[in-house]
Each structure stands twice: as C-alpha cells, then as structure tokens.
Image 1: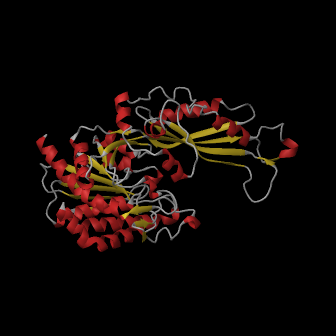
Image 2: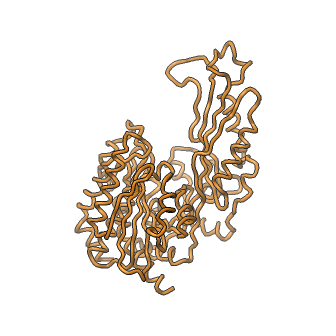
Image 3: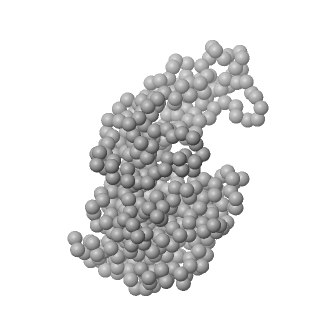
Length: 458
C-alpha cells in the first residue's frame, strides 16, 4: 500500500487537474442544450482510459447519450472486473444557492466543491486513476473492463439494451461500482443493499378550462383539492402505505439481521440538525434508519396546478398533477407496484374529474451476500485503508441499473462507495472530501488484489 500512496502523492496535482477538466464539462443529461457536452465528457473519459493503459477504449452511440467502453485483458484465465460509473450529472439549479459556480471546481476546507464532485465524476475518477496506478506499476492482477454511461441521472434508459446487445463484450465476474456513500472514514461502511424505485406521474383533470373560483367554486370539483385529498390518503398516521397489495411481497429482515444493522452509529439529533428539522417521520414498529434502509416508502416529489405566479388569481384550475416515487425492497417489482398504485389512485377519483396516471421508470431492489469473494475482497480493502472492518449498510437510495445488470449479465455488483451523506449530491454546493477521493484510489487496487486472490483460491 505504501507504493500506492507514494504514486498518489507524486501525481496528486495532476490527478486533480484531470478531474477538474472532467468536472468543467457540464454534462447534464436532463438538458437538451447539453447534448454536445455529453459527447465531450464521454470522449474525455475514453482518452483518459487510453492514456492510462487500456488496450481499447471506445465511445458507443445509443438512442440517447453515449456509453464509454474500455478494457485491458492480461490473461483470460484470470478473473475480470467490470467497473461501472456514470459521467452525467444533475442540473445545477438553483444557481443562486451555489457559493461558487457549479462547473468551476474549487477546493475549500479540504473538499472539492462542484456539480459532479462526488456524484459520480469524483468517484468514477478514482477508478480511472487506480487503473493508471496498476498499469504504470505493472501490478494489475486481473482483467478489467469499464462501462461508463451518460444517463444514470435520467433513469439509465439505454444501458439495458446496450448490455443485451453486448453480453460477450461485457462478460465479467463482478461489477464494481462507486456511486454510493459510507458512514465516515472513522466508521467505514459498504453498501450491501439498495432499495428499488417505482416512479409515476398523476394528473387530475376537471373542467375544460380554468374557472372563476367565485362563480364556480363549490359547484365544480377543484382538481387541486381532489389531488391533495388523494395523495394525502396514500399513507396513514403510522406511516403505512394504504395501496392494497403494496406489502404483499415485502421481505422483512430477520431479528439477527436487524441487530447487525443497528450496529451502525446514529445520532438522531445530529441527523435532524443536518437537514434542518426538529422531528423525524418513521414507520410504526421500525427505527428511523430502518424506515430508510429496509422498508418501502412513498413520497410526493412534486405537485402543481393552477396559478403560482406573483399576486392573486382567483381561479378553479382545470388540472392538477403530481410526481410520486415509491422506494421498494426485496421482492417488490417496480412495474407491478406502479400498476397497484395507479389502479388505487384511479379508484379514488370522485365523479366530476378524470385521472390519468403513467409509470415513468424504476428498478428492483438489490442485496449483496456478505460471504462471497466479491464482498469479502471489498471488506479487506476497506479494513486495510481505514484500519477498521466496514459495517454493511442497506441504503435507502436506488441505482436501478444494478438489478438490471444481474438479470441481463448474470453478475453481482459490489458497491464500494466513498462519498458521505453530507456531500450534498443533487443539491447546491455538492462537494467531495479530498481525503475520501484519495482513500478510494488506495482501496480500489487492493480490491483488485484481494478479489483475484480469493477467486483463485476458491
């Protein structure tokens, strides 16, 4: 490990310059105006792979944004690790909330501040530099492939078809991902599970135009009022979701599993202070952490209708809409849950309004076994870098493509995240500690080493 640290120290400033070059490309996948930037970012990563020692690296066009593939094959008898990441980022708005421009990275108090600093350019970059270190020092112990996409932030809409078409090219023994968090460098953790996601949009339509609220209010149903009543009814006072059949396939971890998860340090007061609230919501019978990690949820992500401009406009609006996300646990299926939700919501419509609802996107939950070479190699790597055995943590977030990888490529994924919950991903002033960036660069080559050793033994 000393050789790794020496290499990082000798190349530290160059590494940051290269990362900042990638961050400065505003690769916002949700914005049509940034389409050319998506190509620039993909080409930037391709060029880094080639410079860092890849046998081949290519930018593959899709129906959306391109996917970068690269590889270095040293011996077909050795294991192959497929590194997955994404170069697209969330929109930076609201811009006025940023201390410095979102695509002009700046180091302050030991952290890189910029959109994509953590999610996922910073964490992806660790793998690119770990690969460089292993090739430059002739210590790459196994084969490696890279699949870097540009649509993770908009649902990974084209990567499933890419995987289906390129199964042989992507053939590997494990998929290594750094797009998650850890508790802290003092208390390292590995994300051993992710919740799934089912995302729908609902529209309530009433009169054929906006009406005068004085002349029609009370006689004509108000779509905003109806929508509010419906969405408020989707959860009860105990935090239970009221959609019939919603919990039918939910797997509840055993008491022993819950006890293991409870080893995670958690200061409720600090947690509440970090998000500026004075109380927490949780499902009855479960702790706040369990409500996030091992239980399904339903949340309104956006709701709109009627007049929202300056001043007053007394109308009864024609339409009202909401976006709803449902986080899922094993063995809930995204499309099946969407069907249940849409059927239930439509059943609640009173006469006088019509409801349209559609499933937008989603993915299944994912859980990694803790006794496989894939997981144990990560555990050893973290322990060597941080001096403590990492705690397995079920994350409340979702990376829908992880379950897709397993179903299409028949390969398990290991989630070696080095971000922190306080890194403000998806928010203004996103940041990534330099300590974590360089710790990740140390841990990844160790994962390659231990994984290769464990697979050859097993």
